[in-house]
Image 1 (cartoon, rainbow, N blue to C red):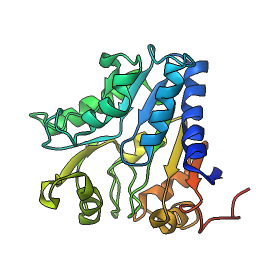
Image 2 (image 1 turned 90 degrees about the vertical axis):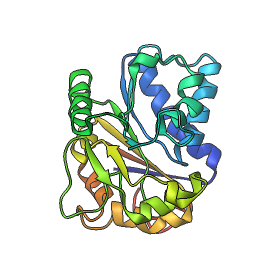
Image 3 (image 1 turned 180 degrees about the horizontal axis):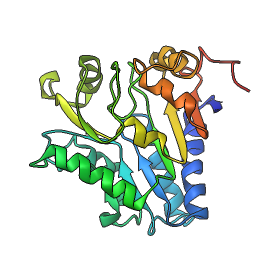
Image 4 (image 1 turned 30 degrees about the horizontal axis):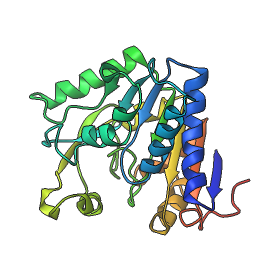
Length: 246
């Protein structure tokens, strides 16, 4: 585990972007696992800057997103397809047919889950998976539970998760109750995982994930088992693990 702490958001974003662009520069046909949420926005902005400076091309890259809400049209302002278009896809040369996000409106959700796993297996493995972490330790939308599913599946979103995401919607009731998410097993099969976390409100769960016992009640703690995990923290998120990693 390589844990890096940054004293500015600029350095944090540059570090995250550099890891991704360096991989793409050395492997122009890499498979990227992408995440949404507030934390990756700055990383994607830096990637776009690097692309516009001619430092990197994504033309041969394939991407798979972690998750998508169930029931939101793909062009809804809060769908993860829209998020990715706004923050990354529309600004780089990543080919549209090479960008994959679970279809939250599939007529047969279970078949969609199987198809997503089959596509990852056929194209993958994922070379680099970017992750955030929820306040309850979820990664993707894999919520705390007595047991976790390996593959892509439908999940009932925890109320804590829905409340955290309510800031993106006009009313809390508009937050979907279900999502399709890549499973923990698939996430852990990525050759490299980059966990990016910002904010003092995440300090406690960062400690639980990196230092606490490995348990499905904190899905992010399973990342401790990964052979190539890089953790990017700002000072606020890392305050409870400061000095514990060299």
